[in-house]
Image 1: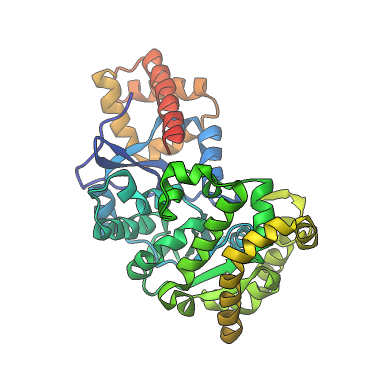
Image 2: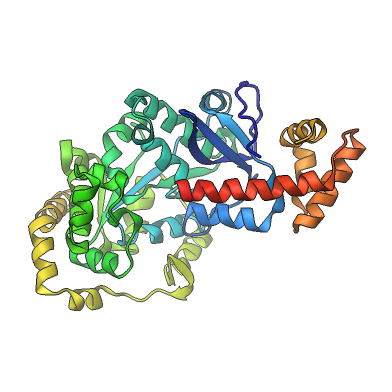
Length: 333
Length: 69
């Protein structure tokens, strides 16, 4: 049973959260589930949604399915708070730690790599008729719907997927006043991590190959090491393009977690009580992606695993960009 | 989907108080029972079979969308 998509702009969506943006017969459709105050404390948005789907049979049965017009109407009738911060990253460099730290405060709604935002940003790849202007309008409306209400007194944050640096020009235009940070790490350490457990962006697929300017067949013929490195290269290039990095706060993994308290919280306009700061500090002792385990530093191990061949690829493709980021970061700080 | 079930489905989506009641259910069986009872108390004819069918169908749609993503 696929329910009829509602297109009459009179629905009260208070308590409902968009969880999917997809296409039916060339028209975008949004699925919403009722979350009403559910806190996003899992490391990733999808984990919270999956948990709600599994634990609450209601959410498996009852969902709004709406047109994008309803989303736009909801934005005008119930605008969300302006996000207090956007987090971009190179992957495997501590960005989940930052979101987990922010999520310790019940005054924060922290959405980590929400799928609906990703789907809106890639809408033109699913349907080439979608214009940049539409993507921007939809992104504004989607983020608005996902943020807490303006009268809630809460702050909202979004951590984007690493490949979303390719959409920085659109996002900076759509959200000109939102503070943005970019987190990165010694690229060889990121590469070692990706090769041990590949993120979806480092497996050749239509979206990422397109972002690299490759056709899928060419992308699939590259070695894993080369493909991963090119993805890291592209991620950094997008941050460095058009002086974008100058308007973002750059953070090296080695500065975590102290830098969160020293610079990131003030940059995001966050002030916390002593109790909240203590809670946040406690969260840094756990593994951000699997809080059941304690965090243990792994840079030395990753460096020791780097073969000369891997270093050669990284030095060719990413190290110069890393140096450029470091140069800008040191000037900022 | 019968007309009664279709109409009641829309009622639920727009009634926060009813949503709160139905969200308490922790199993599919409990939810089906409650949906049928709440529908009946509001004058809608909804069978347990069709609610169960909708649950299965919605689950399949959910999984298909994951694959499609």
